[in-house]
Amino acid sequence: MEKAERLVIALGGNALQSKDSGSTAEAQLSVVKKTCEHIAELSANGYEVAVVHGNGPQVGRILLASETAKEVVPAMPFDVCGAMSQGYIGYHIQQALRYALAKRNRNIPVVSLVTQVVVEAGDPAFADPSKPIGPFYSEEEAGALRREKGYVMKEDAGRGYRRVVPSPLPRRIVEIGQVRDLWDNTIVITCGGGGVPVIETARGELEGVAAVIDKDFAAELLAEQVDADVLMILTEVEKVAVNWGKPDQKDLSRMSLAEASRYVEEGHFAPGSMLPKVQAAMRFVRSNPSKKAIITSLDKAIDALAGKTGTAVTFA
Image 1: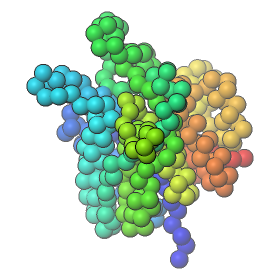
Image 2: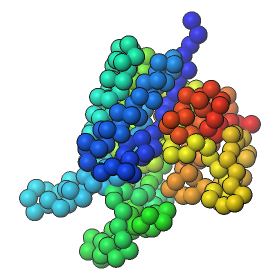
Image 3: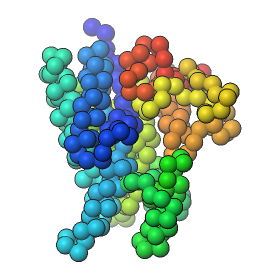
């Protein structure tokens, strides 16, 4: 029997929340149920799947709730809020995906694994916070948060201001052995929100830090370490484009590593948006020239794997 292809999926924010619905847990679950129909269909098509998801809005709200209630209960550290977001997002995905698989007569266990990811204490990202978390604020509200709480606030894609935190690169997935052990008979939801960022102390302990690892980079590291055939980064657009939003916008069906590098240098991809997706795709194909990465929208995932749409990033 032909060996099934291994697929690591990185879910964008639109796979967890809709712009048209509220930010409640109930609204999130409703969106996740639709997302899991697509993931279940990939499984039904014979792919072995692992799922990585983001957590920017969720961890921001958990932190905000914790800080708001600090006069009643102690506020939780940022790394603990990250772990909490892994738990509740993973719970929603595993619940919805289990049902979507059962409808297709696929009795596959689904588990979410609270995952720690080692980062370097000297990573330059700690001196330049860039990862947006939490809700959007007006310019006036952002100024107040800077003064009152010392937050670093940055404008985000013309939609308002958000708090930003450091986004160091992932170096090691602590629980990678357990992911590998589970792979053959379980769909694992892992490295949620990029993983809980931890540093290794001189005593060999792991210590959480206030940061958010980009989930695309975490998914790429996971794909390398489970020897995935494809890294699939799912976002809101069907294809990567150069000259985005301009009259000469060009949608790309494929990019070689050299072409992707040139587009990055020319500044075609927005930081915090398409740039990390393209960079993660480049890292994956650079690590193994026989593999490929695909960037596309959730509803086009199956067609993209068949080469009908999406942007494939290959070594040459």
